Image (cartoon, rainbow, N blue to C red):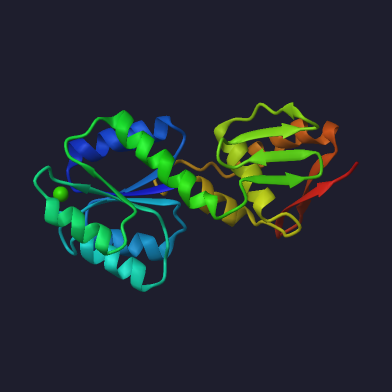
Length: 222
Ligand code: CA
């Protein structure tokens, strides 16, 4: 899951980024509304955490532009304690939820989880592929009814392959989905995760076929 955080307060944004990374999210951070707007058109995100008081385009303008592009990305706005009008305006402009500063990080994490869960309710809750079952809400995978123990990145790779089962997924798509811009993506990071996944899936009758020059394809072999 990839999160864009638009917040110009350095201390606050550091705290939020750190907390969300520890939860396994890839977090990109921008400090202005204009940068947020650019980022949103440049990369696929799963959630936007948006401060309303931002320099160079305020949060409401960012939100307006996002929705006017028809983008339904879940948006959590951060507002000041006395900002009742801001909250109302934010929700009116298409924000999904808000949280009032100051807040505790566990509460923010819970709101983020709830929003991501809600945004996935429109999608299948459970993806079944051969012997594989992926619970997209609980992030829980079983194969032949046995729980599969996966790292956060392995899980993300598998989720992407499952969502596009039957189609080839390129390495670039996986990288965009899995990593924030400032994260070190070693050249073979994707290969390593695919390799680990293969070792766990192959004996159970699911394989990840590499299509030279194109990417990966999920297949059942049983
Ligand atoms: Ca601010």
